[in-house]
Length: 165
Image (cartoon, rainbow, N blue to C red):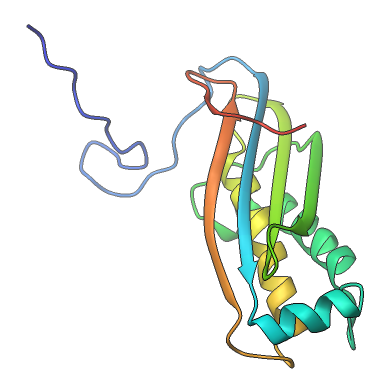
């Protein structure tokens, strides 16, 4: 019986040095990815945020986080060394209470290209979460970010999980 080979790291050249993946031979196809990140607050901070309608002295927390996450998606290739610059066709960031103390940030990104948008979705969700932290840190430094995770991707060689709409 033939054993399946272990997945190989794609960002290494034959000598084991870092290298950007050459995607020029791949077909451009529709691709999408959804990622999430959570922001957990101490109970008193969550209560205060609920009472304020998620507004802080710096302004609307959710709206600011959505703008920051959107900007981050579009600049992912400037932050992650081997990410390709991609034409982004769509970004959807949703932020709502997950439970009494945690916000759930979900970021879905779409493109038609030769490579996927998983890193863009993860970057959008985590930068939105960092923005929430920044806007709320005056209330507490005990705010916890995470987990951040890929929920799903569609397009390319294989699909994974589910992609939001």
